[in-house]
Length: 161
Image (cartoon, rainbow, N blue to C red):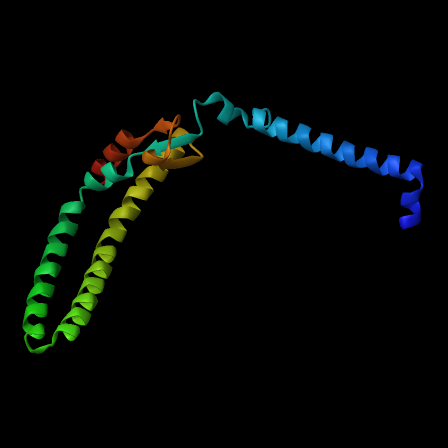
């Protein structure tokens, strides 16, 4: 192999080959970035990216009141339980039990919120599919562009209750 590289003619051929690969790679990159390779549907729509205000959708969820009511009951029960059991505990035991209670409440909140979040995501997917959107991201992460579908998703959630 080294002897082939000593021949200036072979070095020139290899250099041309590497340069050709580089030029073809640059051309392919420019074609994909310019949008020539995109599908006709994506090119004809305003944008293939949708945006939603996820926090607003959670706040407007019709199931959120049920979650808050159930969570308040859990907090009251946990507080009562903590007060009764901690009477005989020292400070270290109280801190440990308090941490366990907080973890239990966090798990309960996650358990209660998961169905709500899944409904929101299903509504987002339904509207995105209807509008032909390939991607939907949270509005807070977008600087510019995208089709805002927050209101349509909120209406779909209200109708689905």
